[in-house]
Image (cartoon, rainbow, N blue to C red):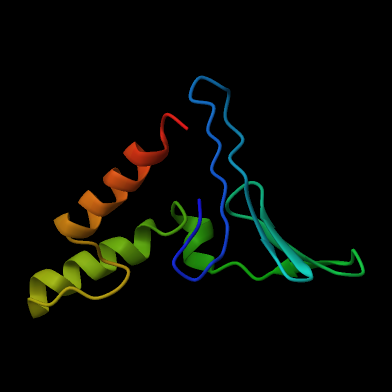
Length: 104
């Protein structure tokens, strides 16, 4: 994938594989790895590994879900959607992106 910024991305998924989610982000002089998603580290251009501090709420709950639910409750109370909340339009864009690359 090529993003508007010019950054390149790759997504690979093996639907019927056993668990073991991992995310890797590659940047200039740095790699960021989450494996499992609850544990992250970054590697500098000297190949030194550095831990990424994890939000305690992401340890107690599934990563990201607590903040999403918090945004949903805030939206209901304040009648305003804020990040990390996502509306149907955003969800539709996500599905279009997935559909575009599903057969690549």
